[in-house]
Length: 312
Ligand SMILES: Nc1ncnc2c1ncn2[C@@H]1O[C@H](COP(=O)(O)OP(=O)(O)OP(=O)(O)O)[C@@H](O)[C@H]1O
Ligand SMILES: [Mg+2]
Figure (tube, rainbow, N blue to C red):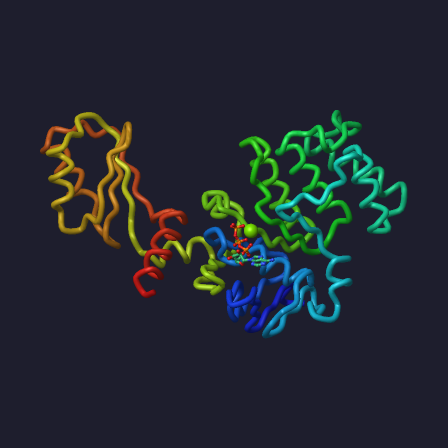
């Protein structure tokens, strides 16, 4: 199967509000797909449509080859899910929660025990296995919910903001897990996130949704290149207002921002950096380090939102 997820003109209304507006999307099997967009854009609604938890008002969609309208049960059997609400039994222990879901997925006892232990150890929860879920911190609950999503080694996992509430170490560990799942087991991952730096690191392809419409799809590199801007960070001493004014007056400079210890400059595509550095030196700046690169996914995302605002 070439595509783990394929939608054609998929739409969903809530009253007059078009939460998902004719979205046509293809997610190749084995890829990590990041679904990005501002609050209320339609990400969670899309995910619920793909799981057959909500009915489509228009178009069609298949997940692992199953039709969301008629074969939702098969979809839920073969996918793992982490929704924004964790769906755990608060009064059961960590272990018993996973035990319960393992039975639902028809894992035999030996497989279940081995898999639960493997996941809990990996997620740093083995010591906490007998605690009731209700007693856990938000981030620890999130880890249990992640373990549940991966329990039956699904071919496709849907993760709605998986790193929300995780500490940086746990977020890195999760990222590595997601990548190794995709690489080693060929699992397809469909995730939503507001963390664009994370999306840039982990996703093969990202899609951007805004007000229910899919406005861009591509690799993070492609999306970054779409805005075409370069960014330069210059570390050094002696930045002052007149230096900043001088940089700003260069024709190829779009914007200048002074941070604590460096100057961040956005430049037109294909700008040479040497004239900028010479100018700084002439102005008396002691330049220590210069980094030049394509703008980040976050900058591209902001630019994309601004473009759409201008068109609206
Ligand atoms: N059950 C519902 N009834 C009415 N409106 C809804 C319902 N679920 C979602 N919506 C609306 O549909 C739109 C899309 O919501 P959705 O939850 O998909 O956004 P999201 O992209 O997941 O946002 P966030 O980043 O905040 O999680 C929003 O305007 C939301 O208020
Ligand atoms: Mg959401």
